[in-house]
Structure formats: C-alpha cells, structure tokens
Image (cartoon, rainbow, N blue to C red; front, side, top):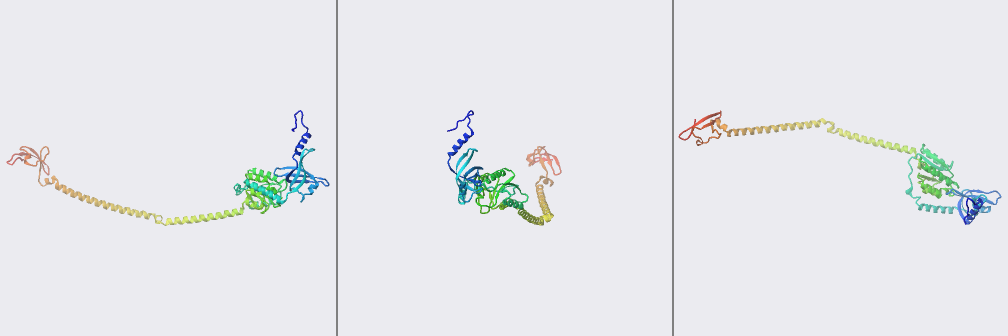
Length: 410
C-alpha cells in the first residue's frame, strides 16, 4: 500500500527507508554480472566487502559476503575480474545505501568470456556496426591526431616516436586513461567524446599494448563499440598484437596490428613523400625535355621547308606566273584587237562598195523631189519640176524641161 503523506503529516526518513527496504526485499535473490573494482578484507573479520562495477554504465554497488564465500572463489579474485554474484538486494538502513548480500561468487572463465564476446559480436554485426560501407578513409596528412592510451605506456611511446620520426611536424592531443580494470571503459568513453568534439582533431588512435583476454575486455565493451560507431572522426584501433582481435578492431575505421603500425597508417613518411616528389619532379623534367625536343625538331622541320626557308622564292615564282599571264593576256588582246580591226576594214570596204556615195564618186547623181523622194523614172517628174541633184561633191538644183521621150532636167 502506498504511503500516505502530506505537508502536515510527512514521513520520517527511517520510515521511507524501511519501506524502500521492504520493496527491495521483494526482488529476492538475483544473479548479477559485473567487474570487481575493489576487494576490502580486514584481517580476522568474517565479512568481506567488494565493489561491483558496471563499466558500460559507470555504476557500482557495494557487495558484502562471508569470508568463506570469497575464499571459495578459484582463482582468487583480483581487481578487474569479471564475476557472477548470487546475491539478495537490501537497503542498509543505517546509511540508506543499496547493497548486495552475496552467498555465492563465480569468476567467469575464459571460455565463458569468449562465448559472451562471440554473442555480442554476432548481435552488433547483425545491426551493421561492422559493415565495410561505414568505414571512413583516413586523411592523408592530419593536422592533429587524437591519442587515447595508458599513461606512460609503451603504446604511447611507440605511437609518438614512430609518428614523429615519420613526420616531425605532426601534433597530438593525448588523453591518458586506464586501459584495463573497472574504470577503463568510462574514462576511454570520456576521452573519445572529447576528441571527437574537437574540430582540430582529424583522426583518433585508441592504442594499448598486448595482454590477456581479460586485460583487453574493456575494448570489447558494448558501450565503447557503439560510441566508436557514432564518432564523426575516423578512429584507428591499435589494441594488443596481431593475434588480438577485440570488438573495437571490427568497428573502427582502420585496424592496426600494433601501435607502431597505427603510427605508420595515420602519418605519412616524410622521406617517402620527399622521394616521391623527387621522382615526380624528375619525371616531369624528363617529359618536359622530351616535349621541348620534339617541338624543337618540329619547328626545325617547318623552318627547313622551302616556303619558310626562302619565302621570296615562292613569291618570285608567283610573280613570274603573273607576268606570263599578263603577257599572254596582252598577246591575246592584241590578236583580238587586230582581228577586230581587220573585220572592221573588211566591213568598211563592203559598206563603201555598197554605199550610194561610192556610186556618186564614180560620176553618178541622185535626183530627189522636194519631199525627198528619189526619182527613179522619167515618168516620176513633169516638165517644170524643180529637183535636187545630189552629187559626190555637193548638190544642184535642176529644172525638168520637156523632150520627145519625156521630161528632161536642166
């Protein structure tokens, strides 16, 4: 039944804590999986205190158990161990805190851990988190590289030294975090979110040296894998050695076999690039020399052609052709004019032969009536008619007189 309270009738803390304890008691004993963050055991004490942590949620609970329960765990528990705890939740009224009262603790074996990882891998693969289409290409020369690794670790040294040896001007944003144990996952997640939000960071390397399967468990945590899949910045996974394959390797954009390999993949080698530039420059020079030589030979061949070697020669030849055509035209025109003149003379001679003036030149005259009509027969005139006699050298007026044969002109 719900507790009835009001501002006038508030419930004391002890009552609320007691009721919460009763509700928690109804849950009964449960199996809980977690990672041991701390084991506290006083010499001679019959009760042991453990801190059980969930790395994905950054949440921990206090666990109490009899000393014999802890002593029954084989091998002995150490910080960072994955365990299954059979415990009953309870409220510790004196402090108002939630605790687990354990009666059995089982340390997860390697086989069971691998089976759990395989089930998680299958689930994430089915969601498409490992698809090759999601992988992003790394920038050719990142201005700033984010590095998540253990503080003062060999992985940090390998990445920094190899990267700077390849490209001395490379810059790093280093986040040193725990890389194993109960606090590894939350701190790695915080560092990853910080670097992904930094606009200057163009690629992030998550690096760790080798270790056992248990040591590398944080890099197969579901929360970390999902966080990497949501990153906008390309992520390079460099965890352990070549044979180590945490789930982070599958979701990262690039998997490096070692931290040294990660430095080689992220940063180009300045010597290789310089050698490539030198080779490209040599090829360009050779190509340019070959092109210039080919063009020079082409120009020389063009200059050796008669039209360019002696351009006036072609002009002279064309001038000679023009002169010959001009002379030919003059000859042709002269012949045409001579023939036309001869034709005119012949026509003139014929015209003169047929002309009345020629007849007049031979002593003949042409008689014309006043109206201009030519007298052709004596019958055309009468006695006394005045006629116009046209001679070769002029005109005469004549008068017609009568005669036995007809009129006669005088």
